[in-house]
Amino acid sequence: MNYDVKDINLADKGLLRVEWARRDMPVLNAIRERFEKEKPLKGLRLAACLHVTTETGVLAATLKAGGALVHVCASNPLSTQDDVAAYLAKHEGIPTFAIKGEDSETYYRHIHQALDVKPQVTMDDGADLVFTVHTKRQELIPEVLGGTEETTTGVIRLKAMAKDGVLKYPMIAVNDAMTKYLFDNRYGTGQSTIDGILRATNRLMSGSIFVVAGYGWCGRGAAMRARGLGARVVITEVNPLKALEALMDGYEVLPMNEAAKIGDIFCTLTGDINVIRAEHFPLMKDGAILSNSGHFNVEIEISALERLSKGKRQIRDAVEEYALKSGKCLYLLAEGRLVNLAAAEGHPSAVMDMSFANQALASEFISKNHAQFQKQVYPVPAEIDQEIARLKLAAMGTAIDTLTPEQEKYLASYDLGT
Image (cartoon, rainbow, N blue to C red; front, side, top):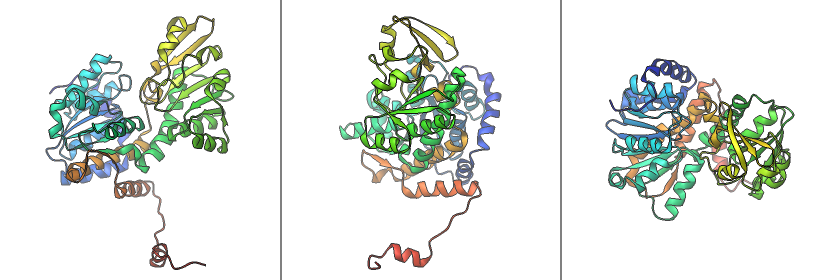
């Protein structure tokens, strides 16, 4: 079998870790049981460019159980868990191309190797796979039925492609499912981001000034968890509505030029470029910590940080010390890549359960219904969102009410006023 992993002998360790994750993923387990019986993906060729973590291991095995021929590659050079990559190759027989710390050339070679399956469905986390199909592997496009996208960053890219008329097949925006962004982005990113920062630095959060750039769902989660640990949280924003919401949620809101002067720990979660940039670094305190939890390593202007520095050194795992010419030192975590995966393990399995349930069901949906779609970006069907929420509640032992016939009639009427 074709694969490229760090060490295939790590497979047994990966097997145990995936088993641990699976215990906390009841929705995906229920989908797998149905997939094993019905084989809805039988013969479907699927290329998946995802963070190769234990939860991805559970998803890939679920897709294979449904009958799909799956190839897997990493969606970020630093997010791969090498034992999981080995597990997928050895125990699941899934061609896997992912090595933690791979350089850019290897990263894109792995994407091409995953695409060698000649996919009918693509599964993405950041849209690098889709973009490679559209720019380097256009010969594959006629056979692609559609694809799915996991992240805010990826959906932004895909919508821009669709707007410019260059998107060549339909995509489902898994990120925009409520059972994804309300939980994964907020609770998953919130917890795992703080986890990554603390693992890398072992700094005390309580009493520190924690600056969150971006008050989307990911930023909300990080801010909430930092405040829960006793930090004084400052939000920076460009959107007046989100800034107003942050203010009314009890946070201090400042422009980055002002926040830079007082912050102890910075974390960007915007999906945009150069959020912390050249003019901000000289304003920062000696010892300030810089981190990013957005998908790409573009939110902190690292090239400017290097220009302003007289030297750098690796002072801890996932921590680089930049000695500025002014005499201050700033500390960059995980090379500016997503700190929750590069310095920790990513989201807890319980929240990825819903995100990857969306991926599995959206893949089934697009493979069956692709003919009815245009070359646009579509939301996850509401019935899939509702079903995932129902399964998750049931797994958590929680029951809810149902509407009575009288209530349904009332909600459908217009003539019952005061």
